Length: 372
Image 1 (cartoon, one colour):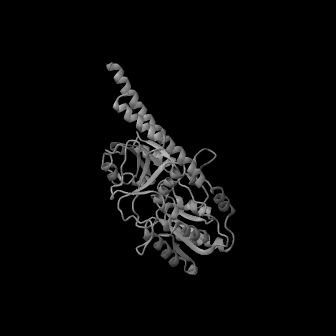
Image 2 (cartoon, helix red, strand yellow):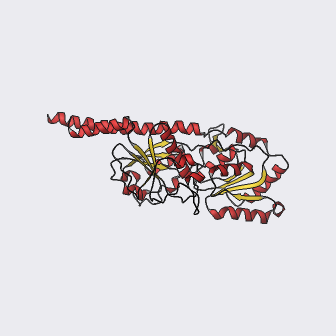
Image 3 (tube, one colour):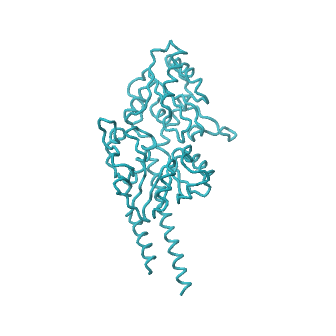
């Protein structure tokens, strides 16, 4: 066996024995909770649980795992078990990847993709929001130009959309999970309307408009669920009698599902891409919007919808159709289902990588045979 074949054989052996790493690049949110980063941590946790070596890859040494006077760390808003996962800093030059390794880069960081395009490892995109896919990508360039030929995303719809930009890329779908601490309250709901919006100022505008239009409800409290530890977030949502969701760029739409798990009805502006869990087929096979929330295509009527729902809630006459539809939408995206999908997708990536090296070995062997 020549030297090149021996090296390839060693690489395959390392992969088969799980002697390699999955390196997930994350943006430092400076202690601010984000659903996208939380989902990446979930992938890393599950991969380590099933025997792989997976790492959180961050840029600077001051990446905050434990909170301090400047704000929260990963342990504060996700939990200690996530802060204890393996972390590697690029600044400290700890990253050392070989052909057996995998590096996973979020879709928005095409500049990072360019920087790692000559790395000998397998390169994969993590796309949780299709709207950010072209954010920093130069005009006319594709992820495949940087050697990123696979993408992991959170829904079939996003996978289809990404295929329209990058026709040759291989798509792999791993839906987001809703942790089991999102659950109904043990006590009755209280007159609090929880709001989650992509833009910080949007929540305040909705509350202000509501109070101006419906001053008789001035005793209703609005609470913006931003910057909270996830367990606190789940508890506050569970206590609320109603939730409001505005996120035009949502690729998956986690918050309404969290609402449903806590029996909190949600008023939502439908995002640009209608989530899969929000659609069903009518008798003729056409897609229609489910009745698992109160949905609108504009933010202008949200204050009025809040008022109408509060009246029904106070009269204890919330339509049974809404309650039943919410109930039927629960437990679709469980932690257990996500764990199964993570194992399936990453096992496939590993299998395909081994196949790439075996194909290379076959070509080298064929050339040697022809020369002989």
